[in-house]
Length: 161
Image 1: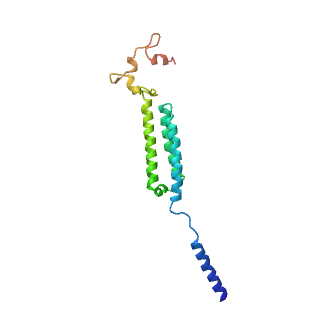
Image 2: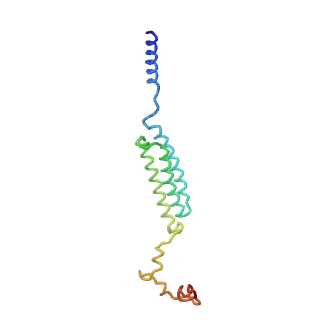
Image 3: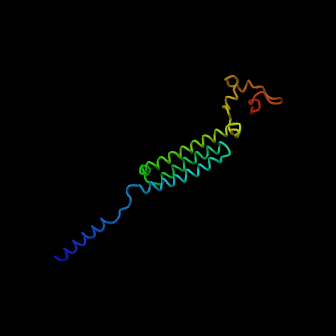
């Protein structure tokens, strides 16, 4: 009888001891803070990069890499971790992301033929439209051949089988 009582008391003590230990953070707040810190660092890196781009191709590459990096960062944490961020953290991240988007757009504007900016590194108009005459496509047969060139490609491709 004493053995059953002692065993029962030990089980109660172990249950009480286990119930009084500090529990791990199940609210996700700790992960949210880690995600916030990593996001701030990531945005700072890309803000510095976008400010020093030499041409619009580099701006596009940095924009694409930024989107991929943010997605990879968010997938490192459990789902809905961002929902546990404070309102202030969310607001700061939103402002930083808007700053990145604004700086990216400004940099593209500066690179596109602005008097003090660099010339755009892409065509201003559709290259197919440049090859048309008054909105109608130029047929290969209506083009005049250069001196010494055959009138059409079919003359070169004929074989005497």
